Amino acid sequence: HRVPGRAAKGNATTAATVCRGELVIMNAAPSTKRLPLDEQVWAWLADVEDPEIPVVSVVDLGIVRDFRLQEEGIEVDVSPTYSGCPATEVIEQSIVTALEAKGLKPVVIKRILSPPWSTDWISEQGRDKLRDYGIAPPEQGSSKRELMRGGRSVACPRCNSIETSCVSEFGSTACKAAYKCDDCLEPFEYFKC
Image (cartoon, rainbow, N blue to C red; front, top):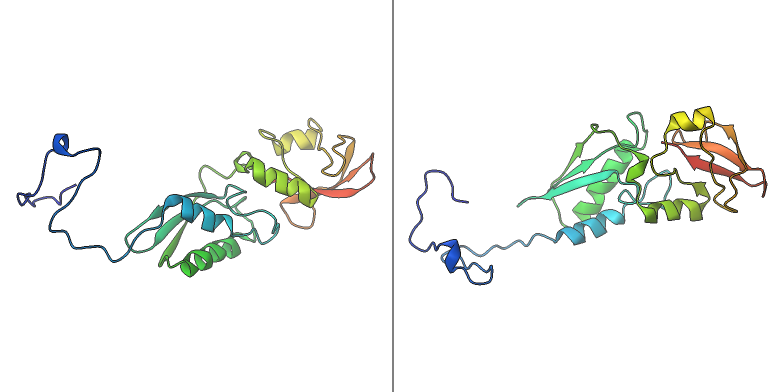
């Protein structure tokens, strides 16, 4: 795109004369800074652990919505799991620290509240990590109302039985509920946010 009001200087060519999608710009100053590939940034973000459940990353949880690389730095869209989540600021600072360590400065966090985060955004890999850690992941498309009315069973992450009971709506963190398995008798937590 050309800056408004600036005319081409004679080294421009029509799109039809560009061969195989390659465009060479003559007389351009060489860039001293290379932007990382999107895949590399996603990999760096995947290394940022959730402070309350360290086996899952912010990418596994789906709370990193998007990012935009800029000539100087990066802007990252983050959605908290719920509006009162006490870990939100810690998560945001962890993202800033991780990306700055990779040379991306400044890191600007944009908190996205609408649409609100949903457990449907947890990746399959994230669900598997929760289960392996002993936390029952929420089912896709489940709602808290169904759990309150008893409309959905929570499977035990250890033995996979659906013969489970809610011990308390409040677990070790506000985003988890305490359950017990009626078959293997093991306690476990359910990720309810």
